[in-house]
Image (cartoon, rainbow, N blue to C red):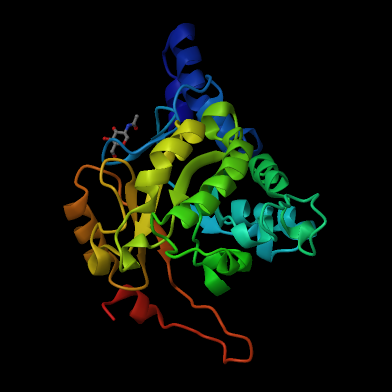
Length: 311
Ligand SMILES: *[C@@H]1O[C@H](CO)[C@@H](O)[C@H](O)[C@H]1NC(C)=O
């Protein structure tokens, strides 16, 4: 139909205009811009914004389609292959925790791939970030310090237990001392990879499910505003909790975007999140469509209905 119309009685200019309008539909997929080309080709003036009911990345509408890949659990030789598969699955973002225990295996001794620890090959964090970007993926970093991640001690280094820390995940003095020392090493390394500096990091999650904590002395209030914002002031800061069970206890409204962790009742969780945080985008950080297996335990599976429904 379109071709017939162009062949009709139109002036050359109109024909040309019509052809130009059609051009985007006739280019092959090979010529589609990458995500980075689309979002950054006109320069970068802003990062991921959650100041309205939807996300904007560098001023353009953006939907986060993210999958998790914990670099420290995958042999480094497979990273690029796994990241290619994530991108090929249609996702535009990869999310990972940062494992403090592996990066600081002894107090004050760090390993980011050249530290000589026995996990050395798994902790090339910067290479992971660069590879993700090369594979056209944005990155959500979940920096902890506590990450849970179904890890013993939630990713805290075991040596912390010998250091007279009286309150983990609180504002207790010794705890804050070690977290601050760690973040002062970690954050300058990752800050250069934030989106607004030309890197892949579009969001950074602080702590993990802090709403579970019995003592609500919110750690990030003490640390974030000083340390995070100093290094990552242009990156969206988020927290993640289950809105139904913990409301907004794990966040600081206005400072962080609260995201949802859930394994069922997505609609009810979203309703609650919207009530707690009107006019901001809804986002799931963890959707538990599966579950982890303990060594020697039977493989866990879930039924589709249990995820959709309200169990
Ligand atoms: C971005 O998304 C919002 C909400 O869906 C919509 O109102 C707006 O028109 C979109 N903007 C563009 C440029 O597509």
